Image (cartoon, rainbow, N blue to C red; front, side):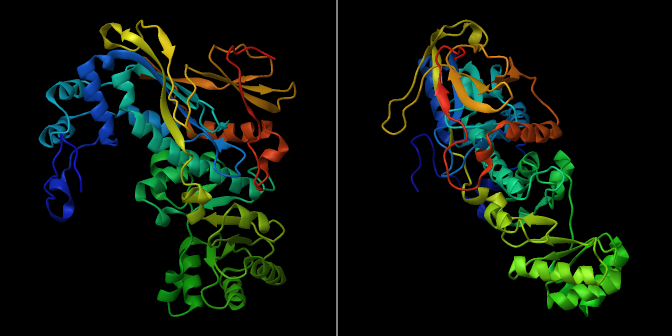
Length: 470
């Protein structure tokens, strides 16, 4: 292990990690070491108090995807509000010699006092879309990089995959088949909560994760695992216990042993008003058809069939003609269905030449564009604005990015919304608003945007420096 010059390998403190530190409750240490390295050097050079604009965007979408979904904004706002260096964090930074005393004094009083704009949660985006714009001093903005990217890259990836799954299942409108998020056991415990939230924005009906319900109000649901059947003396005893405790509206798992026998037993125990049966293995289309036929023959025509078992958007689409009433999705959902990150980046695009008066972001300082020129990763300098150019009937045509405040047409939609004003959060909204927005935004995309086959982004991103109409 190689440690930077201003750091030493900490005492492992035993199995619990470096001295098993506890007590820090903020989000300030959810960051990379190099952000504080840059902060210390910028405080030394004087550049720390220059006005700066950072933007979050993706140079490309995951291979074959037609759009990305903005998610995590609400979580990000909460995390920025808690981005504080308290006594525990400051003590750690001092004891481990990560930063000097000048930087510690700055961090002790750190409060983000700048402005943030962003695409509304639930909206979609395309390559080059400036989905978040952060304006403040360099010092107060640069330390947010990792926090911003870790939240948005994860949540946007989950929501983007979830949106495709919901589309494959027929959407959230009547006639669509509801999806349950069931991925908690396939990811990090905190990522599971965030994933349930992001999936709900994109149209999932419920989650198995109770913390997601407790924190965010996402509807939850749950049935039983094979272990519940196995711990009883027989399948009949297991079903009788579940129905006796939870009522006939419950969902019985019928593929522990023999599916046909289990379905018959389930109806004998619960009667034809049984809520649902769940199938978790086998040739799902064939098994589902056989179970539907058997349920109908037993008079349980209203009993639903729920399928689970390593489903993704493609297998869900393949089940479109099967007699299925809903799906449970786990691993593919919480891993972004092959795209666990959206490759979002946080780049400095503009800065002032002199210090901002008093070190505050809202005061003076003429901005000038800056951009990297790396081969393969070129940037485009300047603070951006974005408008979705639409037809008179509301269909999206292009994503127009400009260096000047836009002059939108009557059918166009301005995309950047104010989220933080001079350090005060002004853009909070209920989770339900993001969920409703996502469905409305999907409706404005051309029909081919919802295809699961590989293709190009649903609409092109157009560079329009002046921000005017066509």
